[in-house]
Image (cartoon, rainbow, N blue to C red; front, side, top):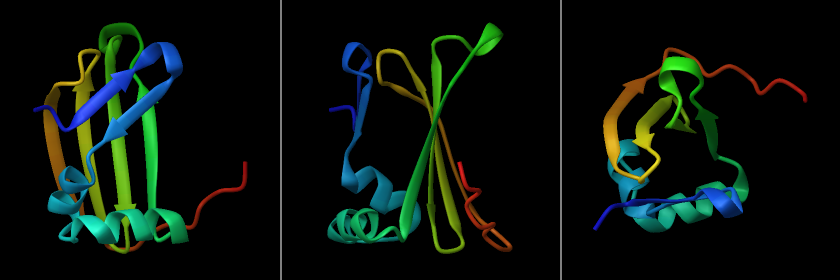
Amino acid sequence: MNPIELELAQRAINVEAAAIADGLGLAPEQVINSLRNGALTALCEQGIAEDAGLFRLTFFYADKRLRFIVGQDGHILGRSSAKLRRRLPAKPV
């Protein structure tokens, strides 16, 4: 089963907590709690031009970053994780 489900008509992307937990070194239940309390944040970017049809999903937790490159069918085309030197504060919108 694919851990990422895209529902483009509803503008929704569902990612299994286990997939995020594995990439960030957390337990799946920590993912849900960390999202709720703001310790875990996410960013979704939709590709344009030569990257049209692709999505980049990035998750930040403490000094860690997890990134998935996903096709429109929800299949993971790439995955990377990194330890960040320092986390930048969120910019006001």
